[in-house]
Amino acid sequence: MQTLDVNFLSPETGVFVTGTDTGIGKTHASAALLRALRLAGRRVQGMKPVASGCERVNGAWRNEDALMLIDAAASTADYAWVNPYALPTPTAPQLAAAEEGVVIALPVITAAYRNLAAQADTVLVEGVGGWLAPLSDALDQSDLVQALDLPVLLVVGLRLGCINHARLSEHSIRANGCRLLGWLGNAVEPGFDADGRYFEALQRSMASPCLGRLPFHGA
Image (cartoon, rainbow, N blue to C red; front, side):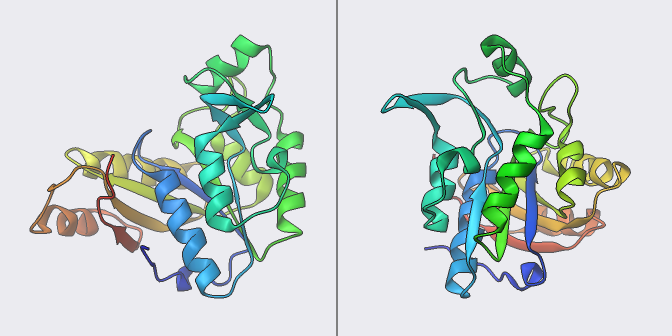
């Protein structure tokens, strides 16, 4: 089990986890943080407000990432609180929602978040794709962060080009008026930056603090 120092989360009752792109390990990082917080004695919940790419399980749509968060948090909360919008098609949420005739609404998500927060010391809310990936044509992830009044944790997928993506994401999060706690490096390619020089360059390039690094965990 990968453990992390979660002292940087100690005063936080909720955190929004975003990433430099899709497929860079937001769920893996969120699950690792949830397990580490549990080991530290905290009651936790994970949340994936909007998820596209779901499978039918016992007559209901279920998303793999949301289920991973539920498992990591050892949660018994209603699935609909963890994942209010479970969209079948594995594509951008705004497209997946339109295909189903679904309108993603902030009040639905904020109500589900309040239900989870009532059962936890800390709720980790995982976003979709990269920071600027919209939830709908009319709703950005920054709107959700501001509605929930959450600080942001940026997961950086460690691979070629990540310095640019990380700096762009950092700049955008702050330009949107959101509080950035820092960033967490996640190895997404085996053997990348074995000597650590690229990671050190990333640390020097970022204005926000590095809060940890996760090793490659497989496909």
